[in-house]
Image (cartoon, rainbow, N blue to C red; front, top):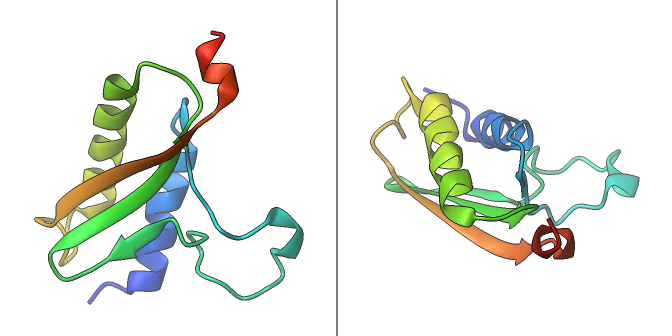
Length: 100
């Protein structure tokens, strides 16, 4: 069985490495010593779905979200969430995305 806490952290790490998106975390970096969810609250797992909240750093969104879905699928492969529905929610768009 895959540890859900570890899996959410691996999903957030995979998406952090993707140029143009970042996980929408609820935990400030200044309090990283606090024992919290390794994904910073940006990933939710249920038995049927995986929801990831993201901040877009550039546009257009569609290619970024396609790449993000592929990364999440890679992380989920071989786990009990491999066939789960993936929901990517863009919670914010960085203002710099509109100038580039």
